[in-house]
Length: 218
Image 1 (cartoon, rainbow, N blue to C red):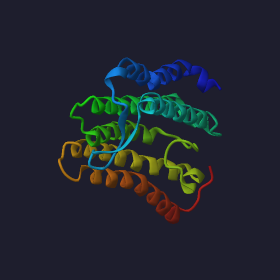
Image 2: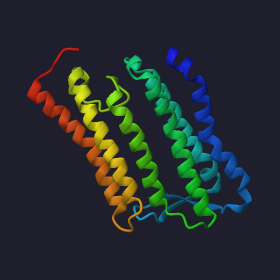
Image 3: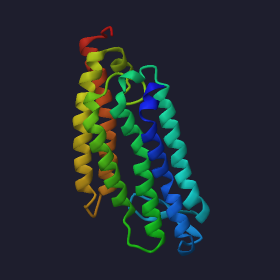
Image 4: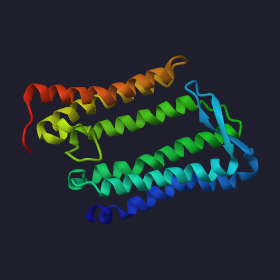
C-alpha cells in the first residue's frame, strides 16, 4: 500500500473534486428544471432526460464509484510497482476531469446556455488522449494501464515498442480531435474513428511484432 500512502492526499483531493458538482447543483437547485438532459447523441443534441435528483447527485456519485473502483483495481495490480506514481496520479485525475466537464455541461445546458455537448465531449477526450499519450511510452508492464495484449505482457520489448507507437497515436488522435471539435460536420464520427484507431492499431502491432519476433522471456 506504499503507493496509496504516497498519494493519499491526491486521492482525497480528486474524490472531493469529483463530488464538487453536487455542491454546485444544490446551490443552483431552484434554478434547475425538474427534468434535466443527461444524455446527448452524436450531434450533441439531448436525447435522454433524468430527474433533477439523479442529475445533481446521482451522476457525480456514479463517477465517484468509478473513481474508487479504478483506484482499487490499480492498487490490486500484481505489477503495480511498474505503474509508478505519475501514472497512478493520472488514473486518479481522469474521473474528476470527467465530472467537471460532464456535470458542468449538463448544468449549463439545463440553465438554457447554448452548450454544444458534442464539442465539450471532444475537447475533453482530446485532452485525455494528449495527456495519456505523453505517458504511454514511459509505462512499464502492468495489468491495469496500457495496451494489455498477451503478447506485450509476455515480452518486455514487445510492450515497449507497442507503447511507443501507442503514445504517438494517442497524441496524434488528441490533436486531430481538438481540431475536429471545431468542425460543423462529422466531428463525432471523426472522434469515434480516431478512438478506434488509437485502440486497435497498437493491439494489431503487438500481435504482428509477436509473429515476427517470437515470444521473449521476461
